[in-house]
Length: 438
Ligand code: EPZ
Image 1 (cartoon, protein in one colour):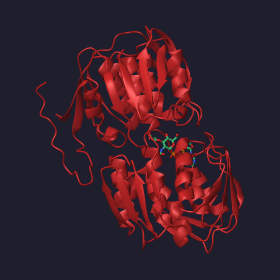
Image 2: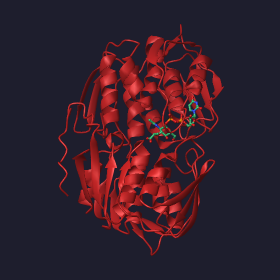
Image 3: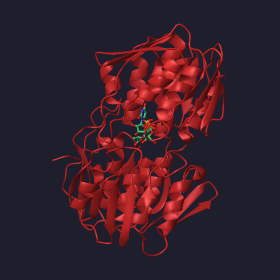
Image 4: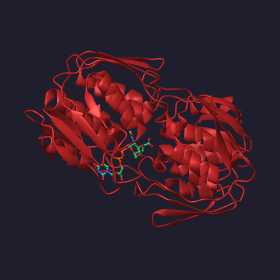
């Protein structure tokens, strides 16, 4: 492999160089142990929740990613003091303002979840509307519906959402939408409701473990919340919240990604620090495909039992099969002889990986919300383009299983959600290198 190793540009904020790629020499079964990082999708709303108090908060096991680095920048642009080192983030939002930097918020959709805390604490929030997203329209109408139900006035002008309120008042609301519950919508409204007058009941709330982790942190700050993890969450407003410490849950999507990489390469790995109870739907599908996932103490041991078998997957809100694992599973099923049908029910256009997998020799047809995978044809390495976070993970998995060399370009998408993915894979024996894109 002659390509020039990548030079990292801005380490302080770890914003990867756009022009980096992974060079993967495939065909090596993964072996060994991998440690799972903290969850990106739990950390982001928890980081925003630190804005709810003027006292210091300490958050541990925050993954070092471009998304969490963006959130640190956003907290600082609001006036908070933030120190992030070795996975521990200390935030002191003593004095803050109600509007965040347009460019920063626009860059990362997850930053929408600062709206609830700002509205609760300052009774006003002015943030840029999150832009479109390659995986779907991703409107925020349910977030705004929740804020309005709590009494806020919402104005959308010049690309900004302006929310103002004299005092938030608890109420009962239904937060279900086109695809069922909303994860960040539930998080945002829950964070607005913790300082509201009276009781708020959120019906059709998201049940994701990340919502439960946020509720645990808010409770540690003095909030009164019950029912997190169920479709009905009840929040009894309090006067004030105080500082708190919290450790973020492990990243179930990262754990699922490594489990699928082991299965696709016919390897055997031990996943350390993952929560099996957060992965039931994924483990169930892997078992159906002929992959054993054995719980050994706090670890999961993943290995194939012979040939991969085809199966059908439909993405659903939690505890159904996670949409954030759909692309990786699609890549794995290209290796299973027979027909697998993958149906995406959460996002309208989350099959960007399909045309790139075809470049590696996969046979997949899109029929409406489903991908029909005719699996079993060996994959061979080629240059492919990452389009979004999870699609990129699918291309890495396919590259690890393919014969020859695969170049995955635009890996800045991966750095948004996977901490040191290439280093972790190298530790499992993968021949993967981060290089500057040619
Ligand atoms: C969270 O996004 C995750 N992001 C996503 O992970 C994940 O795919 C998604 O939940 C679903 O599990 C973070 O937590 C930062 P939703 P979120 O609101 O909350 C529609 C990754 O790869 N909807 O639950 O933005 C929406 O369009 C990312 O890590 C409305 O119609 O997703 C979608 O079809 C990608 N109106 C569905 O609901 C709204 O106001 C579910 O979206 C809000 C959502």
